[in-house]
Image 1 (cartoon, helix red, strand yellow):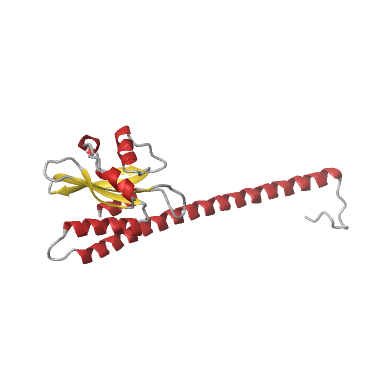
Image 2 (cartoon, rainbow, N blue to C red):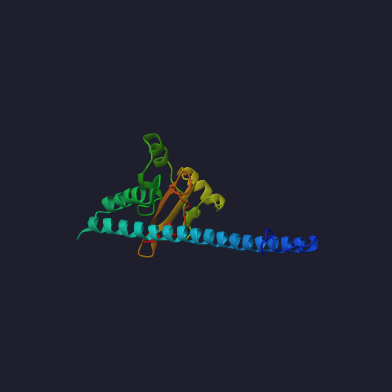
Length: 204
């Protein structure tokens, strides 16, 4: 309806009724617009998550591909594990990575490490790590949204890693060590929170 149509003579009540109809129409289309905007935000968020998951899998395959070149007819454990840590830092963009390793029946020690300065390395190598802390753990995954148990929190403090992911390393059925990597901070988009995708990559 056109309010400025000179051929129409409207009473005050009719004008008010038309205004109310217009207000209802505006409110209806505003609601539709808000719903569409909300849906777009939801789709965008889902797309970001899917891209992140895809990138994590690509990173995992990239690491496996690079490690395949290291593994020949005879595996050099030092070279293999040091190269693994290097790929964790460069491909997964982590700040520090360490492998706690047990020789025979000795306690866990930080045998391989990257991202630590000379002073930190001396401090790291002066420690032995309590097996009981990791005895019943299937993995470690600590990010901003999680609160680690006290023992795991102390372990990560010793490793100077506030946010970390880690898995046990097996020799047959026996745990020989732990591979742990992490970041000093988490901030989108360049330092996204560690997630199950990173855990998947570590397992791979």
